[in-house]
Amino acid sequence: MKKFMNRRSSILLAAVGSIALISGYAVVPAQAAGPITFWHIQSTGAGPKLIQDAVDRFQADNPGVKVEVSPIANDAFKDKIKVAVGADNAPCIFPSWGGGPLNEYVKAGAVIPLISYLKKDNYKDRFVPASWSNVTFGGATYGVPVENSSIAVIWYDKKIFAKLKLKTPKTWPELLTVVKTLNKNKVAPFTLGGASKWPSIMWYDYLADRIGGDAFAKAALRTGGSFTDPAFIQAGKMLQDLVKAGGFIKGFNGLNYDNGQSAAPLLGGKAAMYLMGNWLYGDFVGAKRTGDFGFFPFPSVPGGKGDATNVLGTVGDNYYSISSTCSDKANAFKVIQYLIDDKSVTARIAEGRIPPVKGLTLTDPNTIALNKMIANAKGVQLWWDQYLPPEFGELHKNEVQKLMGLGTTPEKMAAAQEALAKKILD
Figure 1: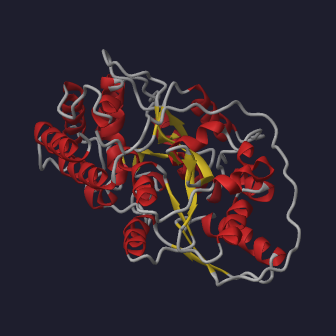
Figure 2: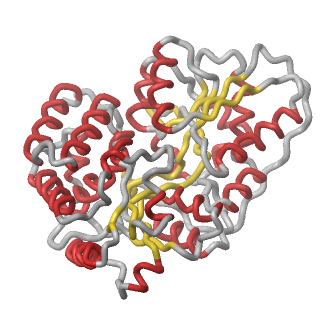
Figure 3: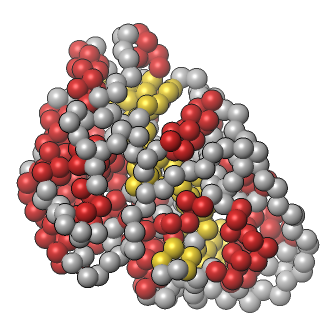
């Protein structure tokens, strides 16, 4: 059997403590083989500055090395990196979410193992152990976790909930009641960037988890499960029922994530809720509106087999890898180290992020609560489109978009996914 990953990414985050310190970097002139090209997707909000500040410090300490930084929007990056890798023209440093897509690059020899770099000065021990599972294949590690510990939660407008005397729902029926009340008061329940596709799969994937428990793991790893199993059919039906009940803002399948279209209704009071990763909190921090929004876990489904503490996400979003064509691999790794050194960790925490390093000291109440949710989760399932091989991830995104647009049925979607699974996973 062809297995794209050797195990399920069910991971737990260690408890918080105080920030562990590492030694600083000495100023060492370098003879670079060429500029270090660096692509990243931290292209909005505080992201570009977080990256550039770290790169500037690296270049000040290594005056003989030039780093060319290119911020790229999320969706555009996914296409651009595929083309670059296929043409043997990948940048020296680039991000991924680990999982199936990165494993494809590993098998193609497009990225290098980082074992020797990680062993030096016990550098690997700086990080939360769970953060490595998504980038470890065949005993070797191919990426460094940097940006955040990211999970999908439901963000909500506290003022709207208070005005309508709504309580955060714990179960799916309670969520439907909230949706009904919001529609009655002419407030869109949820905003969603359906045009970008990947935000939509959070809905289906969470429902499949809450309903079927380990059904996804069994189907994906081909250990007795199928993507046509009842849990997947029910997930599709429940999601379409939510669409038909007016659960989403009008035109949601035409809203784009990268340009802020999908976040705007929540920020502008036009929508009351938004299922999105906790990186969204950085937008609230930047807008000085952290007190206006709260979050709650994806609701449980009565009678479902999934643990209500399970979350979708990753401990280590984004991971940075080094391409095999990079002419200055050693300095490329040093650049990555600057991205997650103590100064960078402190800067990320200030922006509402949870860097995947040991011994964090967090003071923001929402960040503390998010970290606690991750720590208490029974399992953290990597985003399906990143866990699965790229071909399957693309099919999954397309099918969910059609499903939510009422352009297909849960049964047809399930059949399409199982047909591809038999082709590439068996």
